[in-house]
Image (cartoon, rainbow, N blue to C red):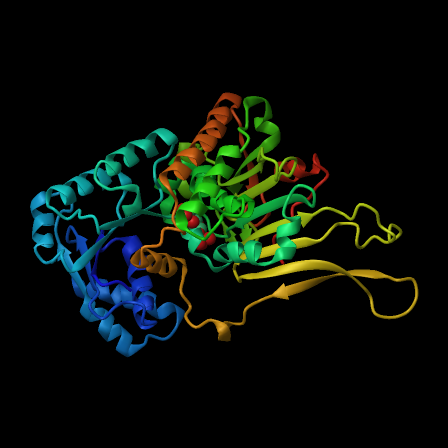
Length: 484
Ligand code: BG6
């Protein structure tokens, strides 16, 4: 992978993120032969769990997807060390640093901790001499709750690390179908030719979840769906659909094009806030056959929270390619099914010789499924076999890669951690992108406040508040069905 050995330091080494995502991701990379033999992993924690407890939990997680590979597990077990220490204390960081020969080893530090301690940790790393030009640092959301709070976090880190050293994870960029977007767009000439406002009517991006806020309500209630899902995952997807063709796949070129999309997002002003955005909050209902409480009951009714658990937005991009093409974004918790997909709806043919037929009047539709399964579907109009009046039908061309073709079932984290180890920043988000997306989101939040925009209740297990349907109906459009 490189001539340097790698030492991965996970700060917050016995925390939830480390146990649920990071160690299992590293184990799956190890099993697939993607970790060099001399790669070491240290989990640093304040000492909540002992190593056996930790390993039992990681083993349980690693075992969930596929049967544990005993050889790979034994190898992984040997690489991993759990040490007790305070990552904000220079002495503790210095004593960790004594284990590392920086002339032969690259340090990759994963900050699996809340952003409020990033500064203290980075400062201690710096003073203890752990920040070398080869050092990489990995962070992930929540990166602030506004442009201002992100900038504060960023400015502190930027005093210690260069932009090239920081890997900001958005786990949606590690999903198979999201990675496939660039391949689909830029390797198929037929899409290239029609990927613009002359041929595309609108785009829908949906991330629907069946889960509620569960034990994350303390965090979630301060944040809501707009900050939790739209500022990051959904805007990143929008960027990959909308970006101009970069000259190469180089990370800086792709990131520059994504930034231009974010800079072209039309601000949603106060006058448009109620027609272009919808907030919702789930009430009790039934999801997948089980009765579930409403959001207010989950977080404690006395709080009388106004936080949104659903948001729909009509986003517009003011540039030549996308002029007049709305990007409808929709995400929510406790919806009818778990489904994330992108729908690119093409325009109807300009003139139809089949105008007497109902089918065929809608225009082709390209659907890129992210989950629960991934795949690409293109709806085409076909003549029904037989003789007679030329009856038409809509059929799907399906591009679905069978599981047998997937050599390794890497999850999004494993893919992204692998890219960090490879030193490729293509799938990570630049600080300029984060700042620009926060600015767009901040304005929506501000206008929601000014307009006192209410979170409309929707029954759990439905597709969100009816106001979201009305938003599209005003444009003579409809959301695609969720449960398919
Ligand atoms: C996280 C959000 O970033 O993404 C969660 O904080 C959300 O609220 C999750 O549930 C969804 O991720 P996925 O991969 O399960 O679609």
